[in-house]
Length: 498
Image 1: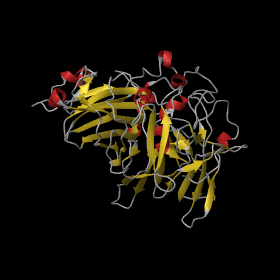
Image 2: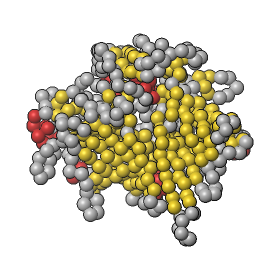
Image 3: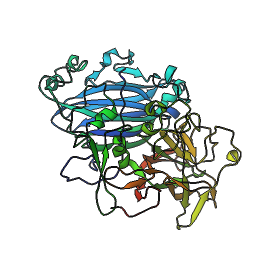
């Protein structure tokens, strides 16, 4: 498979009218870049994926899957969509320990061509297992080396170009598209036009054993680029280095303060600040959501929190620092992956719960963390690219009860006891004897932002015995988490947004 390096962003935004292009999150759900916060084949689940070209123009896209520990690539391929075309696929596990696989029966063209994937799927279709090339051999990063590392994470879709001429015609061949032209695309082809947006997507975690489904829509980023994003061996810094409106600069629109803030970051120098434009759209000082943990009738809540730009700040290979470096991470993150904590890059958080009457309660640290061994991850921390905060009494090193995640962060022991509540998790200020703050430094223009670049959702499962004898009913629901953006001084002190 070809190797590429992309990243995404997440925020709440309104439609933008600005004199120059600037990336923003489209609340109507379509754009040039799509972010899917989670895939998993753990706990008997499969992940369904749907992409829709809502326009009357053909598109060439890049699909990329990243594992959840360090955000390293595990699979990527190109996809050509005809006008108004829809692509469907399934990520599944063939067993309980092997790597995830993608399967599709869709006729749309892929690059490499799906006919050359590992094997055809029984009953028709094509399948390809995820691959460990980015974290094994000379790329080891202190994280797990086995195939189970590729069973959960997040994935990205980015529009590289709109298609015209012969390339557009190839997407609509009858009875099947002509996929040969997409195997080697000439970057100077006049049939390649700048991305135009209009791509939408959805995902669903399906567990057939109990008939439950957790579904959501992708986050869509509009105006990511005004340039064709080929050759397709280019990496994200090169894409952003072209700027989305002016040479040497990249812009993002963030709805904070008295409306919309335009933030500008330089693409020049080393390290480039271009990645901060994406991270600015994700910055969350805190997130809010619901918690339910009841033994009778039975309910579980888990939060998926993904930091899709984290690897650009914490991966030793991206940063160019030796494996195991204690220093070298770039703000708003404070630790290189595998440095202070083997197999992780941890950012502490503080949590507060509120019962239905608004009374506050705390989450106490488990006794198992009273004297943690060297290298153990702290309890209340996000240590991975994808994290699953679980509200349960399971041990911290076990899989989570709902999603079966190996990337769990345990948040429990409410004091006083509570089974249902509203919960706020704060990321801007790191707990500890000395108060410290996570901040994204200001760029050429725009404010300093406090917190971490995150997106996610809450998932809850309810089990009911109020059905005919001998039967159980199981229900699941997914809801967006609410986030708060905070402007601050360089030292992390909150201040009014411009």
